[in-house]
Length: 307
Image (cartoon, helix red, strand yellow):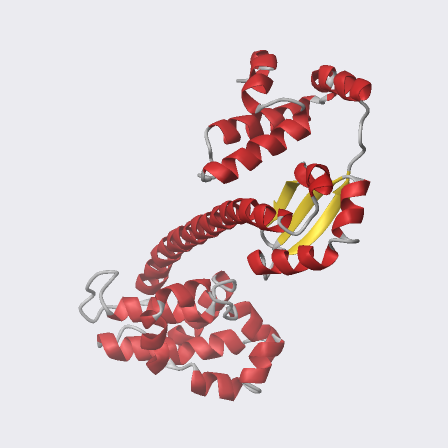
């Protein structure tokens, strides 16, 4: 509402700016009219006082009558129709209402030969609202698919660049420390925050943020200029603890964790994210470190629950 009042301080300002002549502008950008953050009729009443929405609709309906040559509605009927529409469709954006009047004039709802009355308009508006909601869902699905593809591409790019980054970074560290840093792996990738969560030991963290912090930072920023890093410290297990941990992986998993792990294993095997060879190797290794074995072995051990 604040933005509405900033753009149009008074109802008169709004009514002058958003008039029947601007219906063609809303039609020129159908997607924007449906999806953008335009104010609803209810918000017009809230911003300018009760009755603002119906007052704005009156000239739009009158303009429609003039355009169609209709003589079936007097002024009183026009005002009552405006009030009914403002109440029944109070959650409709004014941009979408503009789109309706434009489409009515273009004959989307049939030819009426000068016999346009309130019921003709309300019936057409009812059909339009259904069509508009279907179109909105189409746009939402398109946006979802676009975001999903962007997220998949982002993750694949991170895994690919991580392989390249690791190779270049190792050129800056002494031989004795290379093995220590070998099993650093990406635990999670946060697309929205553009962040990588690394699983590291305390020794690895101390090396990365200590004596190798300068080359680590420079090389990382070369490959990931817009990405930040978070760490999760993991415990280093003794050989005996490691063996016990691997043998007890299945019993330690809750039903929900097992379901997630099975889904993750299938995603790795099927290469759901369409990673290249280096990215897939890193992902398989990350799975092994998390669950104690590779995806194929995990599914074999949990085949009774892999449905």
